[in-house]
Amino acid sequence: MTRTNRPADDSAPHGVLFDRDGTLVVDVPYNGDPAAVVPTPTARAAVDLLRDHAIPIGVVTNQSGIGRGLINRDQVARVNARVDELLGPFDVWRICPHAERDGCGCRKPAPGMIRSAAAELGIDPEYLVVIGDIGSDVAAARAAGARAVLVPTQATLPEEIALAPEVAPDLFTAVTRLLPVRAGAPLGRSR
Image 1 (cartoon, rainbow, N blue to C red):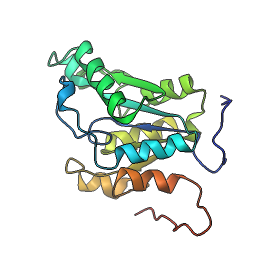
Image 2 (image 1 turned 30 degrees about the horizontal axis):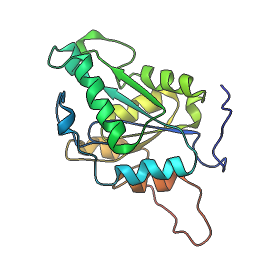
Image 3 (image 1 turned 90 degrees about the horizontal axis):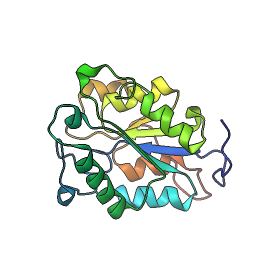
C-alpha cells in the first residue's frame, strides 16, 4: 500500500491506531452512555501531538456488548461520537461487535480491524503503531504486522506487561516515544 500524505519525518509512524476503552477513555464496561465517556489523563495531548505531526489516527475497539445483547450499535456509535467530541475527530474507526464465542476475524487479538483500518488509511500495517492497554491489543498488532505499545492500566495482567515489546507509563509518553527526537529533546526508553 502507498500513502500519499506521509508525516514530515519518515522515522515517525505513518499512522497510529488506539484501543478505545482503557486507552483513550476510562474503561466503563459495556458503555452505552455518552455521558459516561471520560478521556484518560493524557489522551488529548497525545492525539493532538500526532495531529501536529500530520500522522493519521484511528480507533480499533472490541465491543462484545453488542454481540451479547448488552448494548446496541446505536449506543456504541453515540459513545464513539462523544469520544470524537472530546478528543477531536479520528481518521478511521473500526469496531468489532462480536462476542468471543463468534470466532470472527476482527475481534482482537485477531488482526482484522487493524488490517481494515490500515487499508482505509492507505498504509501498510508495518508502518502503523497500535497502542492499547491489554494483551489482545498487542497480539492483534503483532498479528497484523504492526508495532505494538502497551500502556498498562489496573486491568492489565502482569504477564501481559512482561510479554509486551514496548511499554509506556501513559499515553502521552507512548506517543512522544514514537516521534523523531529533536535536538535537545530527551530520549524515551521502552520500559
